[in-house]
Image (cartoon, rainbow, N blue to C red):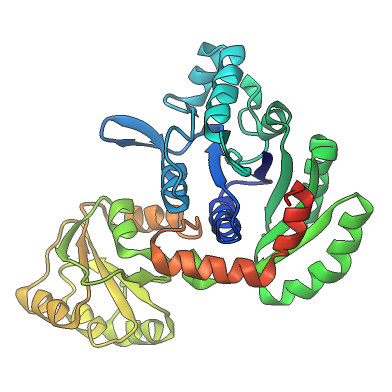
Length: 351
């Protein structure tokens, strides 16, 4: 059995998407793939049980059953760190991993938020890699050229367990930079770039259901299909001014008050408006609801004001979550086109 720990230099780098794409590809090639996460911090309640949200989704997509995340953050981190026994945590992780790894050819382990998360209790990615005797694949979101420094620091901490790097969400013009300067610098440090995945607006977008949850809203008009939003337009302007922004937006959501009937009716004439979010619990006139129903544009009502609503949306946009068949298919296509899967297989020593 081989073990690959997928870690990252920062949170929301796209680890889950890469794990899903790699796991599905390996399964397609005939390998028995299992999935595991040692320490989950983004927790939700599902049927009274505390689960790591992204982990729950990833395991489901990969068809892995059982307890895949034995340690979850169920209280503020400082309280957690001062009340748990690190020895017990490590045993819990090793025991959980052993159960998941039974009959597996390869176990893909998802790291915590970043490779340092959990260091206070000895369950950071560096410690987990040693614990599970795992090879490490580091995911680096290309936010700026300085990410190369972050990768080099990670290498100095992981040591020989880290040899492979994937850059994710790379802007088009930076691809050549990675192939040139970045590759040279990292190769000299004993690192091999096995992939550079370009930024994709579909993956960065949100389904309307995710938007509803983010703003704690309710549907006045429900979506008729899985609807994607890539950009948000704030409707604090006249309909004429809004037209320019709405025309330029791609798969847009309009955020405005329900009392802006003129703006809402204008937006509903635009083919690229995929969703309307009404703030301040202000419901629109019936004409707006009828028009939205006819066009199949979902309308979400939230009690929050516009500023709070936008703040909540900013917190979830760009935190790519691979949900739904369109995103899974897109992630697989990008991964298989831009990542050297054979190099990863060779790295793991899979036959």
